[in-house]
Length: 316
Image 1 (cartoon, rainbow, N blue to C red):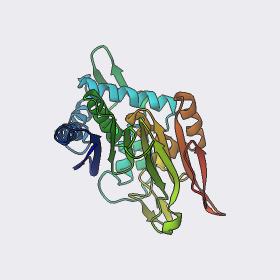
Image 2 (tube, one colour; image 1 turned 90 degrees about the horizontal axis):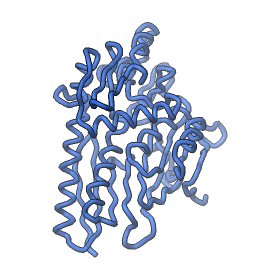
Image 3 (cartoon, helix red, strand yellow; image 1 turned 120 degrees about the vertical axis):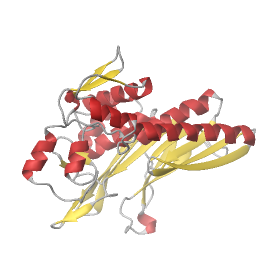
Image 4 (cartoon, rainbow, N blue to C red; image 1 turned 180 degrees about the horizontal axis):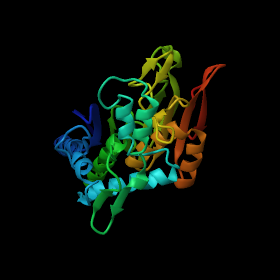
């Protein structure tokens, strides 16, 4: 059994791929094909690049129907479906809010009530019309923007999974920045791929960092936390994960993790659970049989408490 490890930077993160099989040359070739596809998807979905297909949609869809590549159209369809199933907790039209709070560009600050109200008027999947017969997208008002950053890595891993399985790979693990993971089969030395779910606060002691373990086999896993790009104003910390309904950063959950069969769905639902908390977990349970989820909520007594459905908790 041969093992090949490859890595590449894309979508503002480091993707890593571990492949197991009989022929090292073949494994390396298919790994390079996977990374070429991820690079192409990174260019297609880049919200900040004016030449990307997503930017083309944002620049023109309020003027009339815009024809999009079929794979991207299906991604938009899935995003709209999960928006509905999650009660609006997941929403790819939050870009005006991200800009308003300074997370997209400019200084990060609490916006004025007027600026926030104006941004919220452009948020909502009801403004996005998808025509499945013609593969077109159209915005029903100006100012609407779609940003697929919350599902881009998961979608890329989903495509990578298809490529690897099509050529007969039966044992592989690929991740994007460790927060989006796709497992194919099992590792050669065990039944599951073991992924640690760690506390998002790096100040937590090492022996307390791992809060749960995800054992994966032919599954995708995603983790969302709002701490990565946080700023503080008047003693209040504001993270970069936005609550579409309130128009402000999530304040309740510290972390959310989801394991599902598909990478796009796991990415979207981990964000939805961070926004909606227990209500989001209940919606996920209804929408996807066999899903697993974990939500970390703040607690005045112990620092945090967990709502766990299916992950392994460490023995303290």
